[in-house]
Length: 66
Image 1 (cartoon, one colour):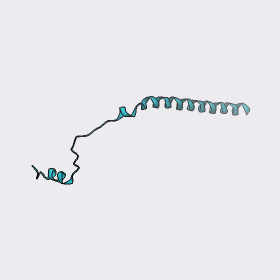
Image 2: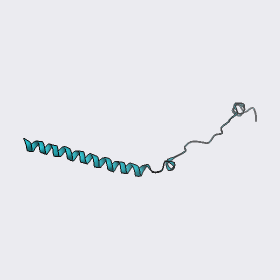
Image 3: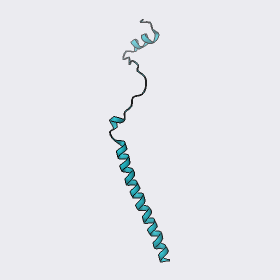
Image 4: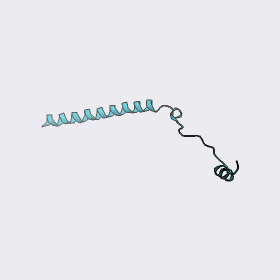
């Protein structure tokens, strides 16, 4: 009975050690992968003009000013 308890306790400790080592390896991997956040910025889309004046916006949309 004592041998069986010792065997299961050893198995639990081995599993805990494996989980700790796996967490450390994962933290190192994610730190390397993360890198500089400025390098990962991507701008996707199309260009368009920003109108600060509402009247100017309405004129260009309605094409009355042309």
